[in-house]
Image 1 (tube, rainbow, N blue to C red):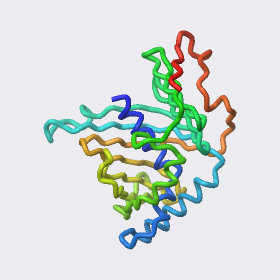
Image 2 (tube, rainbow, N blue to C red):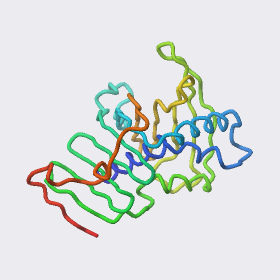
Image 3 (spheres, helix red, strand yellow):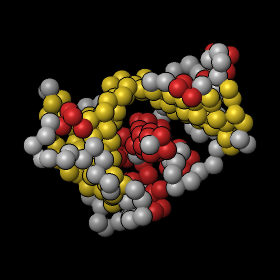
Length: 229
């Protein structure tokens, strides 16, 4: 479960800051209007030195009975993500994932342990550096719908990876038409689980230091750092 949760958080990285990967691939099946919108969003995010975003993660599990209340099968989690080039920090309740571009720390408070590994990309993890190469894999995208919520206009884009062996088969992203910011992303897993990320606040160009992207054991008394490098 923890590995799957970490995978889902990296999918948030995928749709938060590197949307241009979808617009760069020339494919006649792709929607030109969607490509133009993705390019605008990409240019906006790429202009930032870094970005901090608060998010609400909803994990929807398949219902046993269609008439069951959705809330019974939905887990909710709040968190924060900071992205700066190849570095990132994800903080959720009692858990942190921190990467300085070379090393990655995974801290789980309940285990009183932080594992330190060399950061290596794999099919199970999506990093910013890998994200910029995904356009070569030929993602397909199109406008799914346009909607208005609380007086704000949004465009929902549906995107599908060509690799059918991935655990997910589709990602929907919702873009605020006025701000050109990502408002929500929804990942469709093949096992029926849906991960919905609602970005509640986005702050670009925050002040960071090297310490922002490293795990400080001194701030967590009693925690053991296990070096697996």
